[in-house]
Length: 324
Ligand code: DHB
Ligand code: FE
Image (cartoon, rainbow, N blue to C red; front, side, top):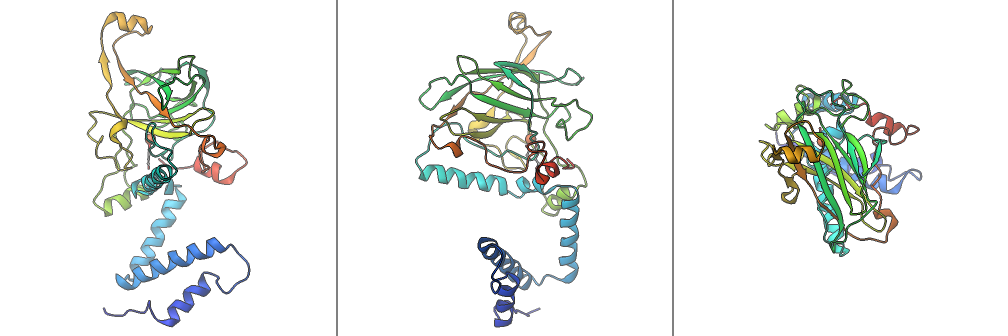
């Protein structure tokens, strides 16, 4: 088919009225962005000769994604989360805020309000029969190497089946989710279990999109972090455990070389006894460096809908309904 109508005055005028350019009310930025978005999509329909069948099947897929609150899952899979990180890295570089542990995506499965502990926390409830004991520890430092006491280290990760508490209703409340405040030497320590990789649910709308691209929806075993301390830039990051088949094939594009960390199996009885554990365990060490900033808005995490972040907020409540 050779029909091309996008560049005609009728279509160009039509786009301006659809985007509300001829209306006094509304939001100017919303109008500009919608105009650009619709223009790109209309042009795409023209260029690819998109049929009505294709268009309506896409609408159906969007409805399915929305009805299962899966846009937050699909977003990393389509690279948006990593792209926003790349932009934030460039913004930091331009402002000469360099150094420190690299950021990487938050993902859609954070839940606010986890229990807070000083220095040490046990994160697992002891109910995962396949859970291999993990000793997770590290030091939070300034970019010049000075330890940061009293830093807030929020950690969350999946269980041995790749499921996250709250979203996976078989787990206890806040299982594998804790906030640990660093001790006088800037150290945090958690006893937990080695997580398994997470996989997008088979057959879910997110999976449908990935399958159409010939892609999988697997993440390597990983552990999420928010780290904050007064006078320092808030850091959202995660570590990917070395040796997982998906460490360098993460569907969410979160892997960064500096964030690949080994889990070292320890069987020495003295080391086991020193940690008051019952048997062999795997140790994961992750030290964190925070960049300095005086700007209060850079010391806190950016706003987004998060489960249990704000019970009054409709978007926050909705974030907790994701079918994962
Ligand atoms: C997704 C799941 C995760 O556990 C994560 O860390 C990032 C993304 C997802 O399903 O999109
Ligand atoms: Fe995750």
